[in-house]
Length: 380
Image (cartoon, rainbow, N blue to C red):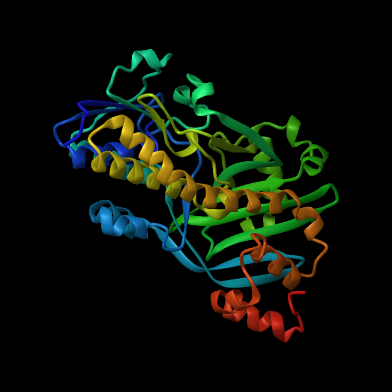
């Protein structure tokens, strides 16, 4: 049994929707409502990428959702780095992707089937407007739930230096590809991958000096898209960039000391962020929801369960967040790395976390390592 009768969830992204699904599946008799300030079909960004096998966590606990999502994903086993006129394949570095809107629609359908009340186009001005036994903040970086009790949640928020803008394009790519380019006004990188058979995400990133030298700080979205189409004309092969709030941003580095305060708990980007370069943000959010509901199932006392959730979940999430921060720090320094030859650049990239040694790399990417060592490289 649970002590819950009514649960309010603020935020209709993957974390909020999946928490609602799991709660209603565990206790069909309780009332669960998700409130989202945007319309149901509004989403910002394009594809959501997961590291290879990242959705395996769903297979055992929730095969129905797993079986709805995975057939609609684009998958690839290798990754490609394009630098200095060479394309280096990193075999065994697999990913999968799905359209963000498509993922949300799948989760919305699952939530409705379980009896969750979904409320869209509704702005909550104060937490006091939510009256429930449990209030879940899945409301992202600018979380109302978290900001309502900064002292209780203890957030630390900083920003990485690089600027990035998130586009789409009707140009499919064989693998997740990183295209590094040097211009007369600085260096840029594009992260691009398909999330539908004929659609891809295209994220452009650059250091602050390049950002200002190109005048991106003075451009509109459409002007930025046109400039980036020219800079990345080779990988785009004439395709246009599609805008969807494709504004220049700096990636936030958020970690909260506490994820629980009274009967309020925060999940996903409301509690922590993970840089997009490791493809784990959505996975982390959904795993937060799983861990929360498991804790509530293990103890009928809500306060005890919430504390158990935080104790068990934080160390697991922290390892992934730390890895994401290390990866993001590499990107903040990628212009200096571009002095390296393509093979050395690729080796530096794949070992950026400091957790991959030569033996592990031979097992992970045997074809790359064969090429790397045949060229006389030793990893020194």
